[in-house]
Length: 201
Image (cartoon, rainbow, N blue to C red):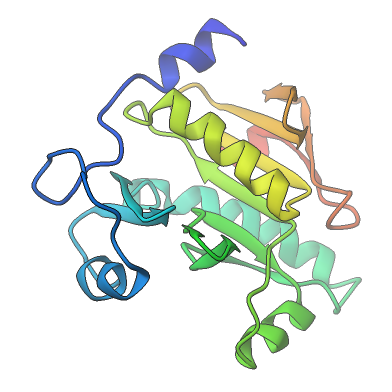
């Protein structure tokens, strides 16, 4: 684990309620849905084993350019393969019945979109998280394990301040991309391999 990674995801409070106090009782999904799902206060809320995880919303206006760069690259691939899917931001997914996550960006195929429309819970195979300086390193690592356990095949951690992309194809091996080093998600999206510089262009 590099020092860049350790410093970029510095310690912060985790598993907090809206009042900033540690949750003492599990919260039902029904109660979470009412209190947190539609909340627009600059934070992202996820429901894990009956606990609320609160983190700053990273896909804000300062990060829109990252999503646009990824969309543009995917669109160029779609001109040759119309069956490719699209990226979606902060979509509610259930990794298991008790684990709800909202990845910053996730790739869904047209088939997954159709299955989701019929009410099926689908797991994206490619997930992207934009890492802020306030992200908790333990929570970030826990998410990586949970995503892979649920069937995600590729995870990118994007660090805007460091201009780096960490590419995971398993929970223990990281490919760190910077400048012209290539970031790949080809195991999920054929041809999706781009230099880190293009992510931050």
